[in-house]
Image (tube, rainbow, N blue to C red; front, top):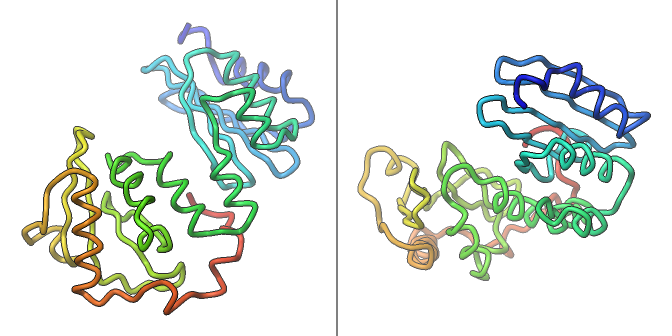
Length: 236
């Protein structure tokens, strides 16, 4: 099938299923990519020739809400049509459960930047951190903080706009085996000994204890009104 899919064919199929959409195409070395925009919503479909799979992203403007993999062309096309038709996130999830992004979309629509960052991190994790993220979301102190990932390491800001990050930092493993490493401060990520290497629950306990030792402020002490602004359109 991979030899039969080219940029013109993929565009034609999506254009037929998603009329009145603005369409951009790219004929990339790894395969064709088509982006459609309609009514402030966007879908991007990339055919990965080597893996014989369609990577489909569903978003609002330039903000991706979920990216999923499918091997069936019609799944990519029909799910794109559903999202661009104006279906609510819950209606979309009912039709296409594999691409559920209700929690992300709800946080986005509420303008809850912290919750949006948590939900996005949970489903857009290329660094083997998913188990830690899921456990951290059940820890009350961490849940109110702003999580972010830098060069494969996760840390937390007390507020969205607080850019000073004393630590600690957490990394997963390339094997995605549920083992996590916790380091105290930034420089220790590269040149120091870890505080702990263990499972997700261990990593969460060590992170919270190290925050207390470092004197990391609690969110309620620094809460900024910016937490209640919608997430920025640009970026990922």
